[in-house]
Length: 146
Image 1 (cartoon, one colour):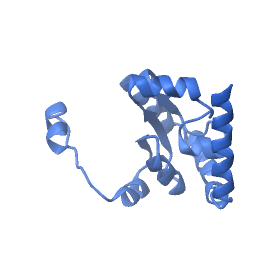
Image 2: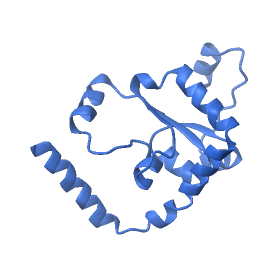
Image 3: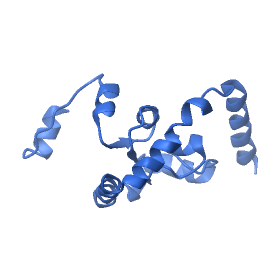
Image 4: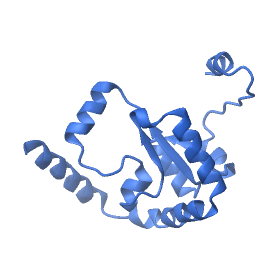
């Protein structure tokens, strides 16, 4: 990865760290993340973020056909509201992502709104996960049958 960074952006000083996500997210003003556990970890650490995700064309097609959720960023999905800006597929362009990061850095209210929403996540995560997972599977199965 270090070689790739050096090839793509030799003018930048990039410091790669492995296995230190918690420490780095805690020290960050904001984060630009791929969707998934990193976004959930950042939210639990109260780190404001922008989330981007790109998948293969085939996976994207399947998601469009079988999509049963409104959000793909875990903090948005868990809170059932668009707290974190999320950019999927072609919307995850460098221009859009840099604008979203710049907006979040310059807008204290947006960062505080994210922090407030993140504060309820530990309570939401204490719910009975087995029955919630079963409900989610049943919901997806019923969508696939329609």
